[in-house]
Image 1 (cartoon, each protein chain N blue to C red):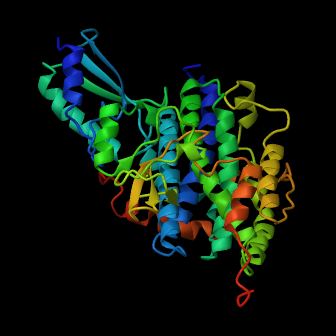
Image 2 (image 1 turned 45 degrees about the vertical axis):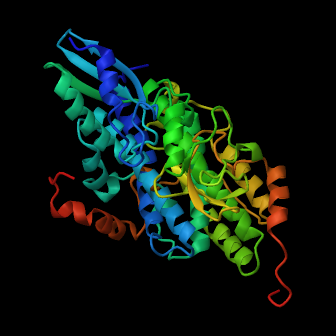
Image 3 (image 1 turned 90 degrees about the vertical axis):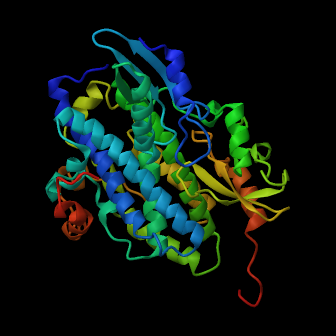
Amino acid sequence: MVAPESVWDVLRTINDPEMPINIVDLGIVERIQVSSVPRPSIQIDLLPTFVGCPALPVIEAEIQKRVGQVAQGAAVEVHFRFHPPWTVDRISATGREALKKFGLTVPAVGQQGQTEAAQPSCPFCGSADVRIDSPFGPTRCRMIYYCETCRNPFEHIKRVGHESTLLNINPKERDAHDASIFRAPPKDLA
Amino acid sequence: MDRITDDLKRPLVDLLLSIADDKFILGHRNADWTGLAPMLEEDIAFSSLAQDEIAHATALYQMAAGILGTTADKLAFRRTPEEYRCATIVEMSDDFNWATAICRNFFCDHFDLLRLERLTNSAYTALAQLAGRLAAEEKIHVDHVDSWMIRLGRGWEPAPARVQAALNELAEIAPTLLEPPPGLEKLEKAGIYPQSRSGLFEPWRDVLHDVVQSAGLTLQLHPPSPSAIGGRQGKHGPGFVTMLDELTEVFRIEPEAAW
């Protein structure tokens, strides 16, 4: 029977198809169970980053192929679970570093994502003078920031959850925030 | 509860289909804006919203398909128009009026989130876990559409006038979202769809009011008539069949094709 550790090792060689990070560092592998009854099987539980993410079938096929090679005849079964929910906090320190080099920032562990302190720093120049350019991005799990210092846009992994996005602030704070943005139109347009 | 008893299967399928169909059709309508939204960021946003909704619908169709012994694709593409359980407000065209598109999402996304949040307490574990995840993602939609309501409501004319007109118009049909799918009371009794004393109308109206007020707009919402029969019972508007034809066109060319 194959040892669970060697399955973990194989999974560390499988990257997310859209980011330079392996699926173990991404934190989507919740559990590996190797059993001999009722039949030899390797059960792998994965936590999707987003429900129905198009990368999931690609990852599953890759697991089937690579784990299949070391499975010694055991059936490889991949299950997608929603509990516990995947969160950005599951991304390892190594994974965070790899993503940063790629120009992709990740919310700091444990931050609730709704205060100024939760803003990422620019992955290129390190500046904290950044703003949200778009709460949506090239994939469902990313949003786009703009660095006012080096004038580069960069991508940021969303923190999904009830205290998730930066726009989720209480109405009074929102009013104050909006008052600073919504100015009266210039006189010639009014 | 891990297993569903036979008498609850049909009501549960109808509930799952009503949520999935709302999301599937709204996602289809949101995708109309891909390539046509008023600015690049919104083109990306509406395309992402559409992807989210259709992915959510897929997960719910898969759960219903497991109960019925069919597939998600067949549920999505091979039902007759009267077998769809979506509410009227998601199926109508927004006629490429940005104010209508935003107001429609405003009504629908808030309702969707409340419904999913309620389901996170479902006695059916698999549904509760899925709903928790879907609610977390739906929250992003709610935040986004709220920021648009405020932006348009406090913007320069004609934005406030146009968004107010769209709100008034959609307020007439938005409560169709609250029409219960067939057999809902059985699910409430079994704790699969947790009951609350006030139902969903008041919490929904209140949360909409907060945003509308903050945007400097007004909204008059009335609870739906308990005797009204609409989308949840399969009675759809005049444009529904045309839209469904378009939506299922590619699938119908080769129904057994592998995607």
